[in-house]
Image (cartoon, rainbow, N blue to C red; front, side):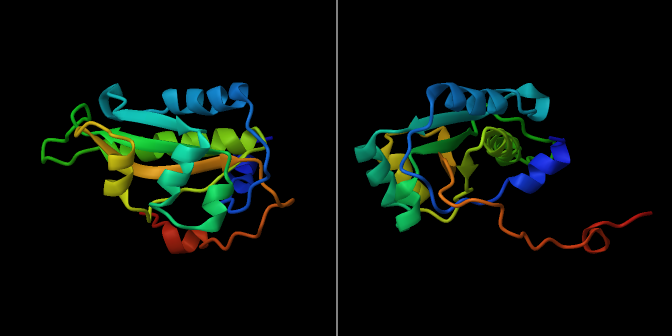
Length: 168
């Protein structure tokens, strides 16, 4: 499939099959993140792959949605502000770099028949504590991952190009 077709195939999955994800597929998803571009190639990210049920349930306390608990895997995406590139005016590109890597994972997952959903509205401080992370790591997003329970791709309402592009 073309890249554009893949971008249209990826959507936010909120219902997962009770089926484990093969380690080989997880490694492919993580490899996609490894190859994501970052400012000055600093790669200021760290990913924690959680498959342990007890730990997943503790992390789910930071985002209490039933569908979230269904995912067989949760990738905790962390930014390392101590190793990220800062622009001359102080702008820290850690979140930008991490977002690119997360979307690489989401697209790789879709390509492999897996589903993901960016989760950002969670208690990041509590998640940090649960995982006993060092101070330099910030939990930026949670990426539940698994096989979608529903067939088909839901319709995505998207703005038209005329609403998001200015030509000069």
